[in-house]
Amino acid sequence: MTVPNAADANQRLSVLTQLCGTYRMATLEPQLRACEAMTREAGVVDVAVLGQFKAGKSSFLNSLIGAEILPVGVLPLTALVTRLAHGPDDRLELQFRSGERRTLPVPALSEYVTESANPRNEKEVATADLALTALAPFKGLRFVDTPGLGSVFQHNTQASLEWLPRVGGALLAIAVNQPFGEQDLHLLRDVARHTPEIAILLTKADLVTEAQLEQVLDFTQHQVAQHLGRPVRVLPFSTQPAFSTMREAVRQHLLTRVAGQHEELARTILDHKLRAIQGACEEYLRLALGAAEAAADSREALRIAIAQERVALDAVQGEVGVLVRDLQTRARTLAANGFLAHKPAVARRLHADLKAEMKGWTGHLGHRREHFEAWLEAALREAMAEVSPAGHDVMDACLLEAQASLQRLVRAFQDRLAEAIRQALGLNFEGARFHAEMVEPRHPDIHLGKVFDTQVDLLWFLIPMGLLGPLFERHFLKLLPWEAEKSLSRLANQWAEASQVSLQSLVAQALDFMRQELSTLESLTLGAEDRRADLQEALRTLGELSLPPSAPPPGSRRIPAP
Image (cartoon, rainbow, N blue to C red; front, side, top):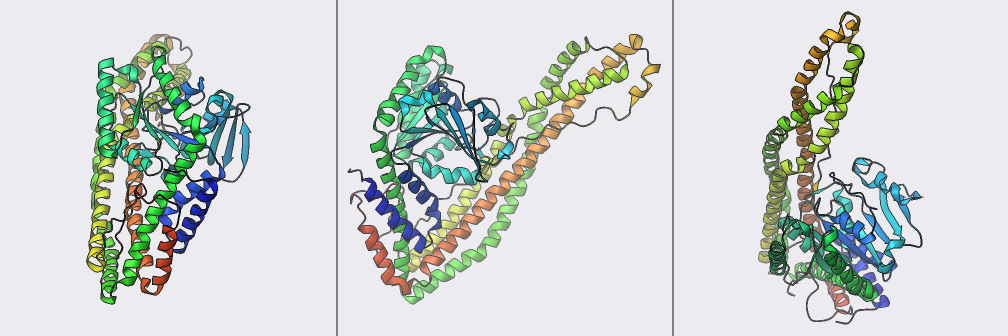
C-alpha cells in the first residue's frame, strides 16, 4: 500500500472535515481532531502505554528511561495524560485548562499526576509534558502514560475518550498474573480502530516460571488473533535485574520497528485514521441517500419508527432506574461485607502498634489522651489508605454488570433501528458503536470521628497515673476493634456512594448515546429527498479521495448502494 504524502493527507482531511460539518456527523469530531494534531506534528508518533490499573505501565516507562521519573504506588493516578519525549534538558511543562503554562523541575510531576496530591485533577492541569535527555535514542517518538485509560474505571471519561483517537503506536500492558481478559479485549478493539501499530507488553514476567510464561504467551497470542483477526506482537517484560534480555528485546522493538522509521510510520497511522473516518462518512451518507431515493411512504415509516424510539426512551429510562437501584443495594452490601472482612487484621495490627507506642508515653491523663487520639488518627488513616484500593475489587462485579446490561440495552435499541431502516429503505445499517466507560469511584477521604465524647482529662489532677496508667492503657487497647469497625464501615459507605456516581454516569452515557443516534438519523434522513443531488455529489467526492480501492477502511461498515 502506498503511504500518502503530507499534501495528500491534508487534502483528504480537509474534505472529510467539511463533509462531517455539513452533515452534522458529530461522533467523528474526536477522530478529526486527532488527524489535525498529527498533521501539525509531522513525523511525531505518540506511543501510548495502555492497560488496567497496576498492569505495570509506569514501571515499564521508568525502566525505559533508566530512572524513577513516573510515580509508582498502590493508589491509581489521576486521569491526567502524561507525555514523555526527548529534550535538550530535563524539564516538566504543564499547561492548565485556564491557558496558563508553567515550567517546573521534573520531580514536581508527582504533585500534579498523583491522586493524593491532585485528587480528580482539582488543580485543573490540561497536559503534562516531560522533556528528558535520556530518551535521545527514541527521537521522533512521544511516549504517553495513560493512568486509568483502558481500565475498568476512569476518573475523567470524556477527556480520556477524546484522547484515544490520537493514539499512534500502542503498547497494551497486561500483567502475566492477570491474563488477557474481556476488558483488555474491548480496549484492544477500540485501539485497533485508530492505529495498525499495536504490541502487547506482558509485564511482571518474573512472577511465573519459564514454562508458565510460554503458556501465557500462547494463550494471549491465540486470543488476540481470534478476536482481532490478525496477529499482534507479544513482548514479555520484567523490571527485575535478572530479566535484562527481555527488556533489551522490548527496547530493540521500539528502536527498530517504531523509532527507526517513525516518519513513514506516522504517515501510515494517519492514513489508517483517515480511512476509518472515510468509511464512517460513507456509511452515513449512503443511509441519507437511501432515504432520499426511497418512496414517500417508506420515509414516513422510518420517521414514525424514529419518533416511536424517542418516545420509548422514557420507558427505557424507567427500566434502567430499576436496574440501578438493585445494583446500588447490592453495592452497599458487597462494600460492607468486603471491608468489614478486614477488621480482624486491622485490629490486630493496631493493637500491636499501640502497645509498642504507649511505652514511650509520659505525663498526665490529658497528655496521654492527646497522644492516643493523634496516634489513632494517623494509624487509622494509614490502615484505611492501604485497605481502600480493595474497593475496586469490591465494586467491580456490580459496575461490570451495569456496563454489560447497558451495552445490551443499547444494542437492542440499535437493532430495532436497524430493522426499521431495513424495512423502510432496504438497507443494512449497524449504527455507531457504544461502549460504556465508567468514572472511577473517588477514593474516599479518610475522616475520623471523635474518640472521647467527654473531657475526662479535665480531672487529670485527681488521677494517679502511676497506679491507674495501666488501666487506661488497657482501655485504649479495648477501643481499637470498635474504632477499626467504625472506620471500615464508614469507608464501605463512602465507596458505595462513590460507586453510585459511576452507575449514574453509565446511565447518562447510554441515554445520551441513544438520543444522539436518533438525532443523527433524523438529521440525515428526514428531508433528505430535497438534498439528493448534494448527497450524490458528497459520495462522489469521497470516492475521488486518493484511497486504495481494495479493502474497506478499518472499522467501517459498508452499506450497499440503493
